[in-house]
Image 1 (cartoon, rainbow, N blue to C red):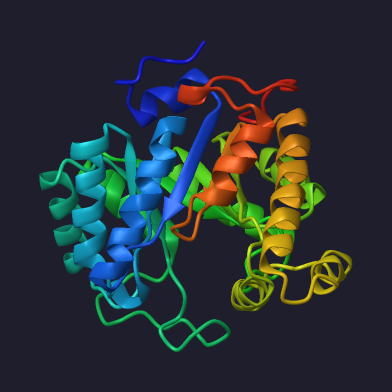
Image 2 (image 1 turned 135 degrees about the vertical axis):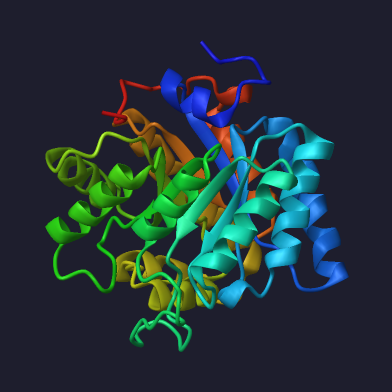
Amino acid sequence: MPLPGGAGLAERLRSGERIFSFEFFPPKTDEGERALWSAISDLAPLSPTFVSVTYGAGGSTRDRTVRITSRILLETGMDAVAHLTCVGATAAELREVLTRFELAGITNLLALRGDPPDGPGSRWVPVPGGLSHADELVALAAQAGGFTIGVAAFPEGHPESSDLDADARVLLGKQRAGASFAITQFFFDAADYTALVARARAHGVTIPILPGIMPVTDVRQIERFAQLSGAAFPEALAARFRTLGDDRAAVVDLGIEVATELCEQLLAEGAPGLHFYTLNRSTATREIYRRLSVPAAGGRAPGATGSMTG
């Protein structure tokens, strides 16, 4: 039974309610921000459990992240999650950001280490007085008190992990530090997600692990994201998109079809919900919702057969 709209994220997570959420990024221009609010307005009627707002490299969009997240809370009534990373900040500076979140009424956050300042694949080096791992940031936020804390999980393993079991142990460390839920990196094979959940549960992880969904609307963009994140864009799937050439409408249609099939499979296998990487656009997500017949306000979707919340 869905909880009332005023229920907080922590309460919704404890209830076992299906979680449906959308991710946005803070644009660097006023024009981009207008497009963002258009997408938020389009998606608000779907009554997501929460929306999240990312955090630019090195905190480059910190002010916009705080302002946009706070505005979502004030103007839409939707629960909001602000991202926070360790990149380019000391522990003292991160405590200041947490205080800003609190003053802005932001009580949910996604705690991430972030990419190395010199780019993916380079060696991670914290600033003097900074943090080296996401579990340290989780612990910092937990010590501050009053936050519901989410973390990242990686169906294909973090690029820097020695193996998949080590990756599962890292997730357990984040849970022990105070994390209440996890959101995965995007992926295209449901088997990668179910294997991640099985590994995590075997190592003692009990928090909900939300699968992250990124509909393909631009093949080159997805290939670039996959390369940067270490996620696989399966060759057989890529080939299906390449046959469409520069027919953007056909690419979007196929992207919606593929994402819908993935979502249906994940929900049928018991995923606790879905998290959509919207890229500040609404069309694909709205259409996937329509095809899934997802009820508003976090209700259960057709075909649900249990829960992977552990």
